[in-house]
Image 1 (cartoon, rainbow, N blue to C red):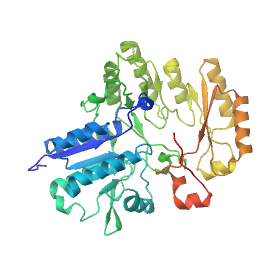
Image 2 (cartoon, helix red, strand yellow):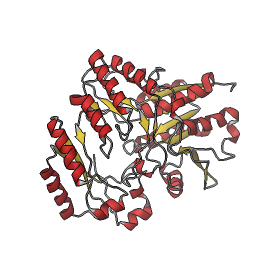
Image 3 (cartoon, rainbow, N blue to C red):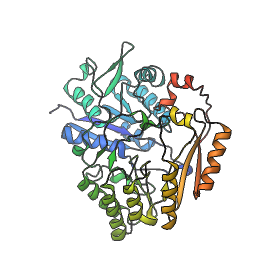
Image 4 (cartoon, rainbow, N blue to C red):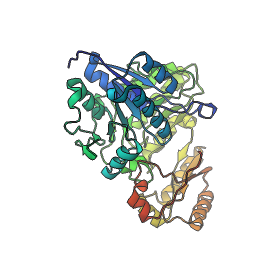
Length: 411
């Protein structure tokens, strides 16, 4: 692939920077993989840069106009992205191509049409599910002929043409992650591995559970692990970088760490890094919902480094509610067995509950609280149901079916 002019690609994974967010800033790993794959595929034909802070982003575009801007969308940066897109259009008009991706973008085509026509009308295209291949597909079109980018569907993306939604073949969660290089090992994350940023690590992708209140619940696909050699090298690289800040938590971004048998080996590598570099002191992850022997082994290896100990997120035990949200919980015997195991090892236990789910009532939820206390959980976390873009419960027909009423509130 050759191009007369190097394509300037700028990525934004924006968040708010204030006292309240100081300890909830993370390395931009998701967009880092997309940038990494673009560099692998197009080499010197593209220049990539990643930004977390809006001010730094705008300082840079004043120096050099971007050809493509890729933005990550989450429920917490929705308005930030709208502001950035508005500014980009005022500054550059249609000279810049804006692509949006992230878990808040639904796989439902009706929702995509509403998203592009009403929520983000100034966006050129949206990525559905995993972004590495999809983003590279539109970059390939731009490098070939910018004037014909939207003449045909682009696999993994959707865009509007004359008011009609045009979608390419879905990529979903089928990316071959064994060919994705590491944005850590290539140095793309170095600018964010300082100060208050907490490191995110991903060792596998995909959640096999289909909870309707979660952005991952709408996805169907296959569980895949990154090459364990790459994961091992990343863990050592990150641990060396953070050795001078042992108080920073290492966050594992897998939806279910401990679902793969090899996760025990990864846990041993993390413990090895702790012993060698004194980092990490603490590791946060969501263990497998089923809490298998593998999950137990992972927690046994990590011991006190596990920030939340054993977490069994019940969310609800109302039979009608479980059916409505496509969820099946562990049994009473499995819960009792897991809690007894944790007690013997002096491991703290936590459950997470959600109030406001379909068919849940005040009476049923208080009953669940009582049972959680009686069972002996050390911590019971109660969350209000978030209805956000990208979850099945937010689709209009589902909201109508369950008579879901919502109001905005500050976090």
